[in-house]
Length: 468
Image (cartoon, rainbow, N blue to C red; front, side, top):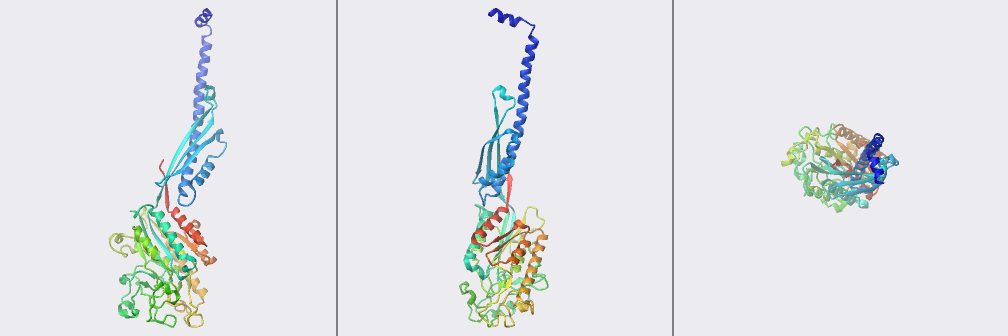
């Protein structure tokens, strides 16, 4: 036996064949490693793409939705089925406290050659991480404060939804270096704050006859400007304002003045219908939340959303830089061409634009010359002599649409919301066309849907960045 082995080892006649056989085995091994290794690289790329898609999808719905569900759906859609015979062996989607979504995935495939070496499958892994950050922006929140917001707890729902949006924007921070927010309440007029008398014309009654306001003072609401300046962002220097005043009349009997919000339609006085003042751009979360808390439904006059919208524009328009205050406000708003700062307006209404006519008092119920309560345009017959209510509404809607278009032409991003059951199809169409696109418009018939709309806006104001 030993001799036979020795003979085999010393016999040189089959050496070439034996070496060839060994060489072929080695070559097959290398070919197998190359083929299966290349397959592993292909699978790794597919797995990584699916993991990245899952991380982005999860981060996108982090505020509203289920990151695990949406992430897995996008993972499956991108990975597919039957790819090179591979199967997914595990997908983990985790949301971190640091506003990240991390995905870990694994998949295996059957080897073509390496199974001859005892390796029947190979497993590959992928990892992805996406960070959600809020965009740098100047944001105007233009909020309906008309009397109809009192019904159905709509004012409370609006304030809660706005606070949610602020919470999304600021996260755990009390201020951000790159985020400023203004709050613009509107009714049938807008309150600029009674300290801004330098924005009023020199002949305004605030200067010539302070006693016109009786035992109270001018609250800060202004009349709409003429000559098309009710639609634009011209500054007070080029087109000054006039203070709003509702003189004593049969439908507003004073000097017995009652300016309490609880008085509702029975309130009286020269500031009747005037809501809280604009809060200009600020980085301070507490200031923004205080402005939201101050909002209440103010009755009489109607709804003039065009004036709320244009004042929202003025709070972020660079033509108004330095006009809103000192300190940090002296350099705000920033220019339109600042690539680091987006300009955004969120505009909300719970009804159509209208000149309201409180039916309890003559002569306003349509049979007298007035035709409406007092507004920033005066009474309806002063705004459009001889016009019907539908004609007056159509003109306000036209001005609203013109302001929307001018803002969009400047690159301002517009989110619009119609809230409750009152906004009719015409109002919904008006606000839909005002928005930047269809995804920027929300119709919210219920309080719950309004909360969803504001959270969706917060989600859209986020930026997603791949970090792993």
